[in-house]
Image (cartoon, rainbow, N blue to C red; front, side, top):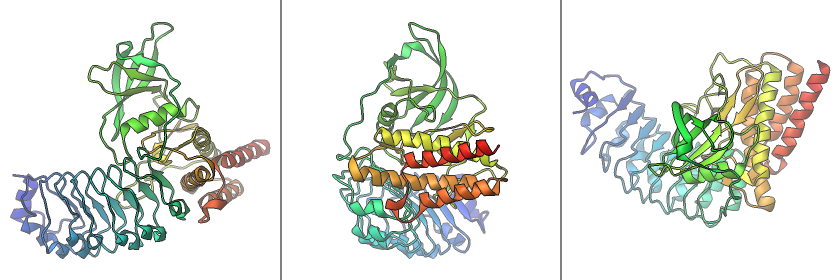
Length: 440
């Protein structure tokens, strides 16, 4: 039996605010309701449950519920009885139906990744706090038109569904900043890869550098048949659905992006892996480079979490911003939307501000013409939010910061069409950098 469940039944967890049960469970233990006055986070992932009790709303303080990996064909309507419930995660549960009454009034973050959902209720657009909507890997062909009124919606994942087009109003949402739609029929094909195939036999894998939802990154020694050996970063993809979409689409986007000094682009594509895994070779950054921030937390929802001690000079912040903007502008010129332009996907040198934009897991192919320009301006808002976060950590040069704040406001303004394109952002930042240099 789960040790946590034993402790719960003995009364050892009285007053607990968070509870994780590992199962297996046939029903939700009645003892959970003994925590109704304090319980805010409940994780029932992988417990084998197929339903929740009708009186689940007794958990009146519950704010976060994870039920991923269970077997629910229907999102339980009783969730709507939880007045404080803001975050719901039902990933990979076999969901087919999402009743409107299952959506609680304070819903902020909904994860329904990797299910069988073909329809969403109008009630989804009637939840004014909704910020994050994770729907990759379903059977959706449309979104509820009521979502046009979801003015606080900031992040949407629609990859690997059955959309033949996206609703035109989606690109007009005033706060939308991060979106992914790769793997839908309307997306088209990426440009052919311009990197060599690298046989597995030419590689000597080394130490683990990092691991994410889509794959593992290790150092590797690449020994081509001609030329010197070189140390590279090797990403091996897991081949499973992520919250952003399909790993093979991430790989295609990374290849289509090409090389750029401000992107972790591909040097080669792995072939002949003994287990059939797909992989990419990427430049190996210096060992002292680091991520700019951590990913969003349950509390911050759509905002990255920074080291509280991080302080930046204005010149450093400007350099980071300019490098990220250059990387994003290059992607847009190549017909790609990054989709996840965040500090947690930005690597920097920790000193002067040299930076690269990483992780193409949410990248999507842009449509041509005005529609593509509209989506580029959605990503401009993501950049503007990142710029604001950098400026919040600056410690000097108030006059220069004021000019950057003007650019931030232009990037995040509610009128999407009035935002600058990333090429214009790069020009503005380069001008500010030049002015700062001449002042010096």
